[in-house]
Length: 347
Image (cartoon, rainbow, N blue to C red; front, side):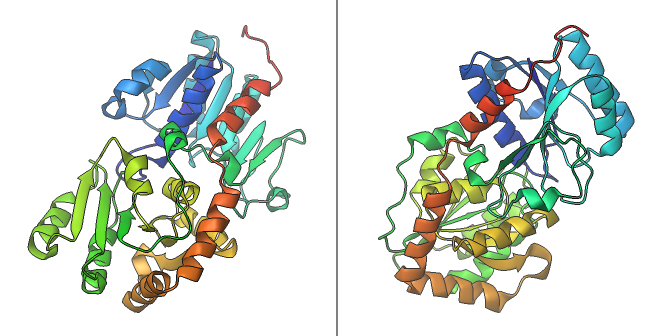
């Protein structure tokens, strides 16, 4: 039995939920059982009812209280393995888990936090073991680093990856399932005049994005048939694969786009996405246009025009992304979780 403790919602977004759901799917196929802890039940979809034996909403109080609640749930369900995907977890939290003989995988992209986890997962293209030299408190920790451990939605396995030799006709514009911080409107306002007759923008937005009504109004007034909005669509992988260029944030979507092989312009909407964006740039897979709170109209337009007008740059990005993102991250992670040395099942 595996416990998933994570944070998800309009403010932080839903990337944590998507990737944990994907890992749970892989664990289920390997004969394991899972319990979800944290997110509100309104985010529990039909698929989740098959994946998780229990869905336990749990609001955060502080590290001590939250960790103690996890321990109680673990004892109740005889479960001592945890997947932690919550950046509020600190050393105090981990010490309580350790004291109660839990083993856990921790999503951790912060290099200055003390870590006692048994497994560290950081799918960033720039992640290295040496980044954690001053953080590790468990000498036997295992590292799962790089895009081949990115837990993509399982539906991406059915998608045909993009051919590098493709002109730009359809442009993907998405910033996750939560608050887009106004970036979609910013991009639309500044790029609409650069859309030639054959080019269209496909927007994917989440139900929880507070800016959806403004986006709809903008499209009705200014879209002229060139902009399409899909809110919480079921066929996200198909929509992404139908596009030729992506304008996205630096979260989980960047791995999905990289897997398909789309050239990408990244605009970060959270501090923890910046290292990821810079790493994609170093790998030759993306252009980083900056953070949402300091966007430059000129940089966005220049980045867009440079990619649209250069098949060579697009092809290099496509080849680089497909080379380093194989798409089996969830299966790889699930296998490592099952390999965890067995602790006592009885508490």
